[in-house]
Length: 93
Image 1 (tube, rainbow, N blue to C red):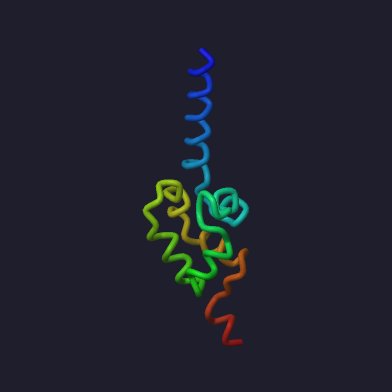
Image 2: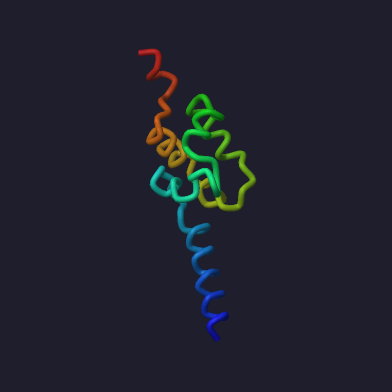
């Protein structure tokens, strides 16, 4: 019975974490983007040089954990801005 309860709990957790976050912001991202499960913030900033590259990379990923996040490109942009990316037009000013 304990195994069934733990399996059920784990299944519910997986569903909540994969289906729940349809709005991205860095607070939701940083739980996985620690460097052990997914690339850390520093690695992302090294890999993606611009905000647009970051958003394109997030949208192109095949990772099933990103399925819910990919439904909200504006949320991905918000998360990118929260970790330090800026809009290209803001850099020219």
